[in-house]
Structures are given as C-alpha cells and as structure tokens.
Length: 222
Image 1 (spheres, one colour):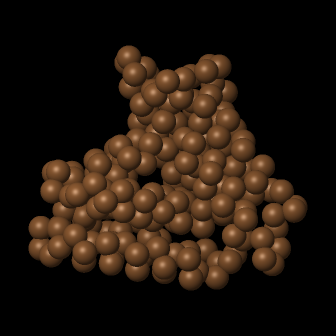
Image 2 (image 1 turned 60 degrees about the horizontal axis):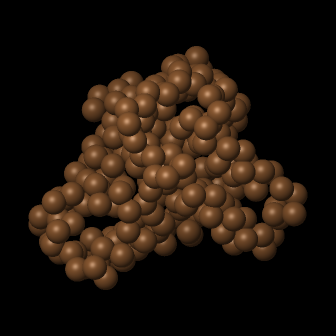
C-alpha cells in the first residue's frame, strides 16, 4: 500500500481505542469505549506509576485487553491455511504468542496518546458480526479512517480484526507468517515471534518504540 502518511499501524489502533466515544448503549462502540475507560484508568493510576510498577500495570492492562479481543479468531485468521497443519498444542502455543506479540506493541504505545481527536461514525451490525467505524484526526489535521471488525459472542462484541485506511492488521500478519511457513518451518516462525516479543520487552520505559508494525504489507512485522 502506498501512502504519504507515515504512522505505525498499532499506534493508530491505540488512538482509536483510547478516545472518548458517544455510542449506543450495549452496541459494539459502547463496549469498546468501556474497555478503553478501564485501560486508561490503569494507565493514569498513580499507584501504578514509577519504578517497579511496570509489571503490575501491564498485567492489569493485558487483562482488560483480553476481555475485548478474540485472540483465537485472530490467530487462526493470521496463520491462514497453515492452521489445519498444526497440532492442538501448536495451535495453543501460536495463539498465546501471537496475542502477546500484539499486546506488547499495543501496551508500549498506550502512553503516547497526545490528544488526537476521534470521531466515531457508528456501528454497522449484521447478525453476530459488526464493524465500528471511526476517523482519527491527527494533530497535523490529517483524517485517518479506522474500522474495528467485531464478532458477538453471548453479550460481548469481541474484536477479531482492525483495518487502518483499508489495510487489515490480520492480513498484514498473514502475508508475513505465510511467507515464513512457506519457506521455512513452524519452529522458525515461533522463534521469530519470540525474538520480536523479547525485543519489545527490552525497549526502555518511556521511550517511543521503533515501529514494529507498519501499514504496508511486508513491512517488518516479523
């Protein structure tokens, strides 16, 4: 994808997730907003700031994120046709590491929110599937469309994909995961994901991380 605007994909995911929203009660947008409020409360809690608090703060944040993302669906879609080739233990391993990879990058960017304006355009619901459309207005005046794809399970609307300017987060990973599996092995894929997670964890607190994910397919996810 060609674009004149440079922005890490997961940073935009964050901005859409961390903005106040006016939404219909009980709808997908409202549930995303409720999760956002909980995450921001954790980030802003004075008791969770300072030296030695990172582990507990991130633990609480991950619990909130886990409530809203359908990691099993995202992992299965991201690995695509290769899912059927995996054993049950491998599927569980990949799902856990895939969710950790996204969350590590997501949490590392949460405190970078700096007042970007978000306009929620509303929900589109078709049975148990839905889309939450928002527009991010950056501090430079650029409008960026973001769509959350959600699936209803019970009373909950769970995120199974996010698109930024029409670029799917899951598809971005699928193309790179597929390339690794087509040319190498599952063990190689797992090693690369673990290395990426370790690199994210090694970023100094408070430092803006290097973009681990970009909007262009093939751009340095793995």
